[in-house]
Length: 134
Length: 79
Image 1: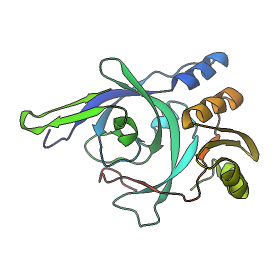
Image 2 (image 1 turned 180 degrees about the vertical axis):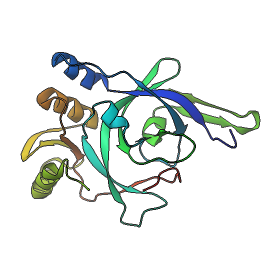
Image 3 (image 1 turned 180 degrees about the horizontal axis):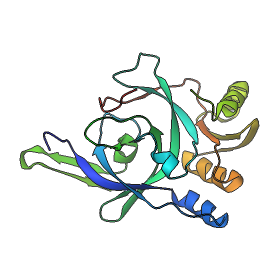
């Protein structure tokens, strides 16, 4: 965990509301996409890799001005998408995640404080474990 | 960058002062040049957006006097 960070395998899919809309329109429900996600206490919102929203057939429902280590103080505009994150143990959280390019470590999702604010995160470094309870 | 939702964002700006006067802190649903409703939570606004418009772009925005950027500290984000 020291090298990789708190990483968890999750799935990203459409929210229940959108699923109901797609069913009413008699359209196919996209399959959940498995991704490697990192728990990120430094992220205001959860982040998804560019391209994931398109694979799920999602349309943006908002924008956010994002400031990151590589942007100037004015920040950059990024789209927000309504989606669901499937965690292990059948836990599902619906969020409005921000789409931004993620590079390195094969991480396709950052789980931000929008999700963390719903539960308890315990990082037990000396036994290389973390738990996140919702 | 913003081509999608550009019209909706312009609609918000045009109506911003009025929205702040009426419903600061709440969430507005906008599609094109239409203010489609004001709701208490982001979730309610999103749900109404899907019910009313389907799976198309629409704007869910909190009505605030000052727009605050969102922060990300991860170096994995490469913009």
